[in-house]
Image (cartoon, rainbow, N blue to C red; front, side):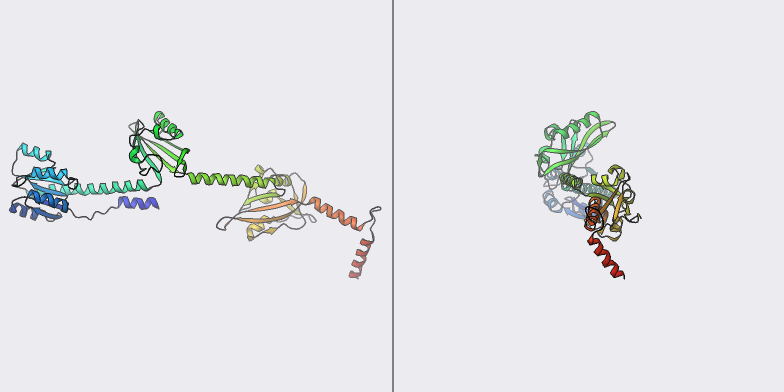
Length: 426
């Protein structure tokens, strides 16, 4: 979006400024003739002496001046010289008009700063064409200047360091006006050599590209002396090659400090989470929103009999074979229900997990969907643990409570339970 807006600004300049022409001649007749011939080419200002022409040129700012050479108070050559010596008027195009056709006058016309010479009597058709050509040139100059200013403004404002270097590694341009990236502003950087300015690692890559003819290289580096919180940068080095000869080097730097720090934080957080999940006593399996496994901790590996690398990319039901302990019928994995119904789901009672190695474990716990920051479901997670020993202990305790310790025969507690049950049935 930013690039599109910038392109529109740079390439859609609309120059509505009208062209301006000044005619300077001490003969009223000549002024009238010129005014009549050129009045449709733009705004025209007529002046009859050199001193007045200098004043009017500052205020009127014409694009072209048709200047008579022979005038009583100040000749055209002197007027032109003063115009060219004034920064406000030095860019005005001056066309001399004279009745003399000698080479001396032609030489003086160009030597004093004129760009053309018209001989009297004036051929108005040719005069119009010459003025039109000069106005087109001035129009193009304004367009080029406006585009150059826009590009300079854009280059200065983009959050990227842009620089251009000679093949001898001397700086010719940089957009760092405020010394934001390095200790030198763009003006101070001019003429400096890369080895005196760039960090060592960056300079090594910069120098290698030039010496080995590597046309383009991209690398991420850490600045040894960070400025304005810029610690990590992505450097792009591009050789400018003309006819197989290196003529210059473009170096750009972009700040990737926040991206790098964020990646580090995510990596650290991910490592802490991995260690935590691998250290807990419960089995953990995570999937995407299609129930395809993307994580499994060591406890889950032990209970399912699958290695994590082999299980990744497989469907949860292929790895977790859940069956009913009594009927041995296949049970729906709770993670599928959690993903479908968007809620936490407890594992079915009396569930047992048949591992890949054939071992059977009684398991219990729950599954839940995983949501992103926008509350969209991006996967699921199931946490479970082995309750085989607990179930066996519960069965044993029940048996001991209802049977004699010595003979293992049913005791009065079991007799009372059966009598109560028989009474209810009767």
